[in-house]
Amino acid sequence: MTLFVLLPAYNEENSIPALIPKIFNALGCQPYAFRVVLVDDGSTDRTAERVEELRARFPVEVISHPLNRGLGETIRDGMEFCVREGGPGDIVVRLDCDDSQDPGYIPRLIEKVREGYDVVITSRYQPGGDQTGVYGYRKLLSYGAGLFMKVVFPIRGVRDYSSGYRAYRWEILNEAVEVFGGRFIEQMHLGFSCTLEKVVKLKMLGARFAEVAHVLRYDEKKSESKMASIPTTMGYLALAWKYSPWLGLRRRYWRRRIAERHGNGASRVRPSEETTVCVESPAI
Image (tube, rainbow, N blue to C red):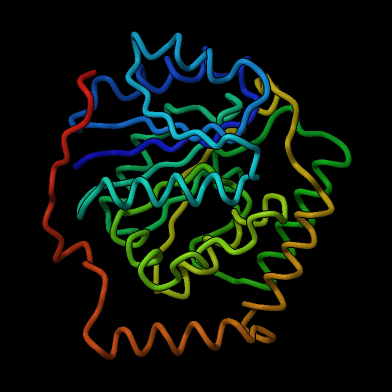
């Protein structure tokens, strides 16, 4: 098994020097190979220089956008890279680059995937989970968004819909890329709504979800928030219109496509059937 750690980065010069060593420290003693993939989304600060300084000690692979394209395109490019480079049995973990999410949770995410889940989410709302440094308007907004998602997109095993710190089985991401193509992440310019969009579309493919308790340390965040409230809210509403069980016109279209695909014998490798393939990663 190879683990891909995917880091979407935009103007994270202050976070990178702390986060990268934490990732390698958390994974250095684990019994699997891992590759750290950072997608620099047209940063205008010294993010690229900081990464280059660290690469002498920590072999980080870098994908660069000449201009800032937004979180949606950044994650899309990173996930497509991991799908191309990986194979059956591999796992992709995506976490924020602002040092508010502890890489120490990654081994627990891997354990849950190995139990048979396709997507495992770090959750503030599981027993033992929490968030620090989130107050007032932002906390209220987070609560309201979470309630909206739970009502409009009820998914068994999911309570924290807006957490981007997740582990994905390679097989489910590969199927998503094959089925949806460039539309796996459509809402590339509507704030952080792509975080919800992935969950909705993976659920349509039949993904199994689980969560592990997580303490979000927003007080450890070393960069300014990139959260754009209005575009993200518009993105949530657009997803409800397209993909909710009650309104979703696009949902019906994709469900037909998925049914036709499975009817033709194409299906994702399930945990009980999978063959593990180890892909070489840079020496640690």
